[in-house]
Length: 592
Image: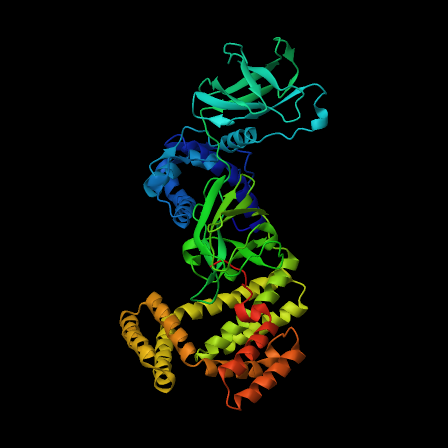
C-alpha cells in the first residue's frame, strides 16, 4: 500500500488480530484468523479487504522467540548478578499474560531452571501476592478509639504459616487495670477452641490449630476471675495457612568504612549477613575491629565514627575506597556513651540489625571492658544536598593528597589534577550538589583504578628504595643491633619481590619504614618541617600565624646543629595546628 496514512491505519488495525492469534497459539497448535468484508475498509483500488489466515504455532514461535529471549536474558542476568544458579531456585513463578505461551515456558526451563511453576494464575499472581503481603502488615490503631475499660492485649504471631500448629504469644498491656485475666481463642465456625489460658503482664503462649490452605480467623474472648466476659482489644486475628510471605529483601549490600593501613584511607568492609537479597529482618556482624582513638567517659569530643555504606557488588567493593560508594549515614559513639575509659587500639565487635522497615540498629561491643553501646540509624535515608556538599568538600584534601602522592611516584597525573580542579570549582559555584558528588566520585574511581593498576610496580619500587635508604642509614647511624634487623629485612624484601606478594610486601615495607624512621629520627623531623614550609599555602591551618612562626623556628634549628630534643616539640606543635583531614584523610576516629 503506497499511501502512508492508509498503511499506518491498516497496521494499527492488524494489531488486534495479531494479539488474537498470539493468544490462541498459547493454547492450540494453530490459529484461524478471519475478518468480515467491511472490517478492514477498502484497498487503493476500492476493493474490500479481508483477512483469512491459518497460522501454525511453529512459524509464530520463530517470530516470537527473539523477543522472549530478551526476557530470558534478563532473568539470567539477575541470577548472575546475585551469584545464584537456576538449580538453587525452589520455583520460578510466572507473571503476566505472555507467560501463558508454551514457548516462554520451554525457554525458561531450558535456559534458567526446570522448576518453572505453572500452577499459579499469571494474571492474578501479583494481586494475590500483594494481598498476602498486605495481610501481614499490622494496622495502626488510634488509642483514642479504644473504649475506656477495654482490656488491651498484646498478641504476637506469624500472619502466614506453612505449619498446621502455630504459637501465639499474648500478654496484658502495661497500663491494664487488671493484673491477670483468662483468654480463650475460638475459630470462626466455633469448631475449635483453645480453652482458657491465664495471662498477666508477663505473658503466656497459646497453641492454635490451623486448617490447611485457607485463612484461619480466630475470635478473642477475655474473662475475669469470676468467668465474666470482658470487652477486649483486639477481638480477632487471622493466620493464613499454606504460604509464607517474606518481607522485601535487602536491595543492596551493607557494610562500613574502616581505616585501611595499606591504602592509608577508609576502605569498605562488608557486614557478614547483610548481603543483597537477604530477607529482612536480618543481622550482620563485623568482628576483629579495633579503635583508632580513645573514648574518655563524659568527654563528648572523643568519638568513634562508623560510616555505613551500601554497595551493589561487595566482591568488587571489598578493600576499595569507601568514598566510591553510596554513603548512608554515620554512627557516632562519643565519650558520653561510655562509663569507663576505652583506650586506643581496643578490640570491638559490631552487630547490625535491619528490620522489615530497613531501620538499622548498630551494637558496638567493646570487648576488654564488656561495654555495649546501641545506636539507631535509617538505612533508607538518602544523602541530602547539604550532606553531599559537605562530603565533597571534606574529601577534597585527602583526594589532592592522593594525586600528589601519585605524582611524586612518577605516575602521570595531569588529567586527574584537571578533573579534580574542575570538581573544586563546581563545589564552590554549582548549585547542583548531587551532580558535583557524582563528578567527584568519577575522579575517585579514576584515581582508584590507576592506584590498583600500578600498585605492585609502585610497591616494588618503594621496597627497593626504602631498603637502600635503610642500608645507607645503617651505615651512617646504626649499630650492631640494628644491623641484625637490616639483615633480616633484606631476606624478607627479596622474598616479597620474588613472589610478588603484595601483603608480604606491605608488611616488609612497614617494618623498613619503622626502622628507617628510628635510625633517622632527626632527619625525619627536618623533612617534616621543610615539607610543611613547602606546602604552607595548601594547608588550612587552625592558626596560620602561629604555624608560620613555628615553621620558621624549626627551619632555624635545622640549620644550627639540630637534635631530637630541639626538633621533637616543634614538630608536635605543628601537627596540632594542621586540620585533621589533612593528616588522616578525614577518617580520624574510624575503626580499623
